[in-house]
Length: 439
Image (cartoon, rainbow, N blue to C red; front, side):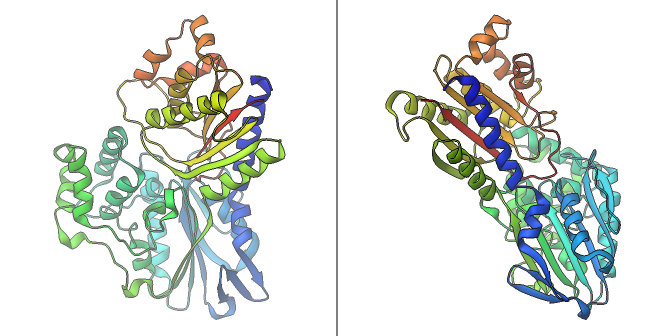
């Protein structure tokens, strides 16, 4: 196999993962009608028993999830609103689509979140609230808890993203400075029946972390949220309203056993594991010996890259853990600590760091891409590299080490044709990494 065919296969395998994560498909696999009953997982909901059905939610995939629900329930839906990123297009008849800021929340998101809160509050004991949550929901559904303001939430989000905080840590804080997160939305909807469908972008699929758990009992505490700021030494930089909120026990979220959750079901309909499994199936169909490394990869992108590069070298030199043709698949979500002022994202940075280590290695390709189609603040989903990438870059006057140090992976891969651009995919189940080695 030549690198060009390996690159084509890597992109094909990545696209298979994206297809498996398609939100409408995910909803249809887990939710269907049986006469006048809605079957969701192992639960049955007699639709005639409900006065009204409301649809609310947020996330990069929530529009496509709403389409699937509208096709299923049609005119049974009384009203609805979902917050989505700018540029999301979907033809919805019963559910309002509200475009909002992501990853930094904005006023549009706040207006939509207020509308979602209003719908939840108005739901009665004989109503059904269908909540659609996917990756990005935390930023897309910002309704600050006093004395925190939207501007302060924006400042805090930027601080946490720039210091390399994990999604679990960021969401822990979001839950304690929001009226909707950390079980807050379920509290507003009580005593209505609530069915939440979740497309997970979270490592381990922890229900209370996906979208910051708007309808899930919160296991984290105010003290833990404050400790995140202290861990990264940014407590003194946190806005005054947030420091006040996180210093008060009155801002605690509802915990397991709270009556709020007596009539709530949370059902995961899609996840990174499902996407990884689909990628593995596609790789096998292409003739590769295939190994799923993990679906919970975390850590600094540059450090994870060194591990992937080491695996690629081991396959090439010792035929371990697989003999070529081989495909190693992983999923998860890395982080980037910003040190420079360049442009890029965690997937592009991972591939750039790996490209340096695999330079000169024959018949090896490494790909990393976000399933949402957007890697950091760029129009790329990720990047792809092989053993010739660094040499080709040098011929164009590109200094890989310097650009990595400046977090400028986008401008490194762009002139090399190494960016993967899928456009918005309408889904988000974290990232997919692939290592391919030819014969």
